[in-house]
Image (cartoon, rainbow, N blue to C red; front, side, top):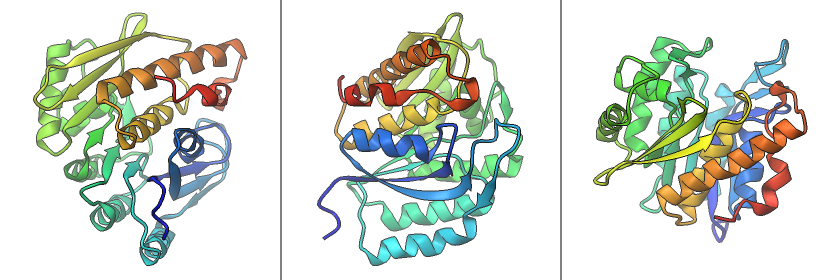
Length: 276
């Protein structure tokens, strides 16, 4: 009864201001004609890049929340997991994958753990190690270079060449995911998205860097990758689709002089998001 429309479950935190996480995935996935079903891991008034914020951990409530979805008999064509704040949450997400994954479900794991060669301050070594347990469930993963290195115990080097990144992707693929995009690799004035599909030559898509790093771009990217996958779009076309859309959004964000804390103004182009 509840499964006549394609659905993606999004497991991430909810942020009321600052445009990241569920607040990004919900409109993006909906605009791509898929029912987005959020499973919150925590609630923030605004993200942690601000000087102060309200925070409520949702971990203890997640099992009961998930149980109601089981009672409804929900089935998902896609599942997207993002930032997870504790070891317990990773165990809950593993259980969710086990309960809801079918042979028609595409799981996308965005292992939000760090950047610039370091873990985020809120992330522990134990939590980073535990994140590896999600890889065996994933069909697609969308790490940045730091996260790809952490997941494979590879020393981070932001100057490593494409052949070295390909070797990292092969190691990741051995753990589960057949499709990998290492996003946002800095190459001078450009950003590179490195595409790996098991059994195929790697591909590279470059976009000119626009402004400085902003919250929410990774969430736009992973949401579009998940929605395109459910909609049957070729993986490399999907990465190009997401890269092009984010570049357009960033240029408009700079034009509007949006504060860096406030995310990106993707709403300006939602009506165009299905154009590939």
